[in-house]
Length: 79
Figure 1 (cartoon, one colour):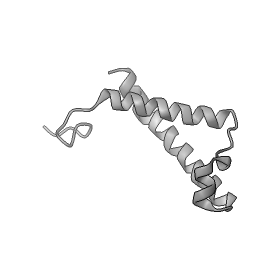
Figure 2 (cartoon, helix red, strand yellow):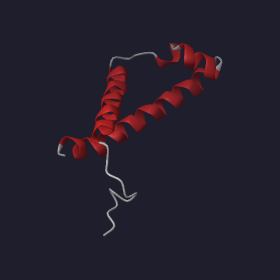
Figure 3 (tube, helix red, strand yellow):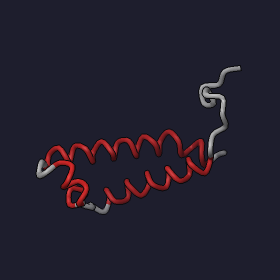
Figure 4 (tube, one colour):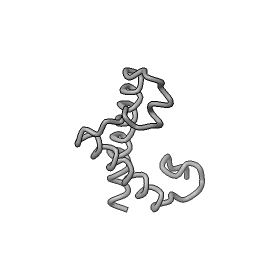
């Protein structure tokens, strides 16, 4: 029987889910304490002074982290 959660035929790796969930929570925490992501050397190198584009890029990362927390935390915590 096909299950959408296990659609690729392999089992889920709970340690990987926990690892990614910790990084997503850390990302949200850094946003809460107003960490300046545009001051990072990698961000400066990628966007070369285009601060608006860097802010949009990191805002999308925040949305992805929040989505990962909302959609994976219940399954990981109750497994």
